[in-house]
Length: 257
Image (cartoon, rainbow, N blue to C red):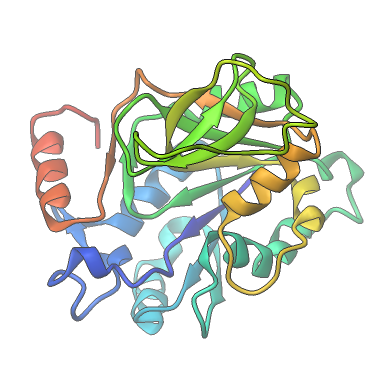
């Protein structure tokens, strides 16, 4: 099984911590966000990872070299222009197609996409099992918490739309394909399990959010599912105060290191 770490962003909300380094190399209790994410993936059994880079890209490359890639096979996907989550994944698609021609059993082995700036204890094994049991095209870790952007799911956990804030009208997939039903507004946690079948279906080009692809595919009755992760620790590390809070959580053993 493989994974992609999304680490190309500018980290603007983390300034001044990112004035002279990429957000992936911001530290929590002596460990970088990149090291923490790689350790999580390695603990799950993943040994092959691709990382997209842009802001201070060479610093990340040198950091990995200095640390011998943390004992993993790591590829770098350089983005001269930021491609957002969807464009970044599309650029890295060849990494996930390797070995397919020689080994048909790996054609639909799912992979994980993980934001570098989230800290969580979400059970990746359970999430992958859920994805495979439901034969989903993509599975998104979500929680019932406040956010500025919600994804909307029905009682079968199928993606049906999105909404900005709690008081804005929803943007739903075409109603001709999705009949009226109760919807649940949930916050995406920056962790996906994706079938490689999705990659050739990403017809968008340039810089685009992967959520755009998910919504289009959901409208075509593809399974884009929610994995409810309410019971697990999760924290966004987009601001310096979030990093400080996460450091305290680790010190107090709120989440295991």
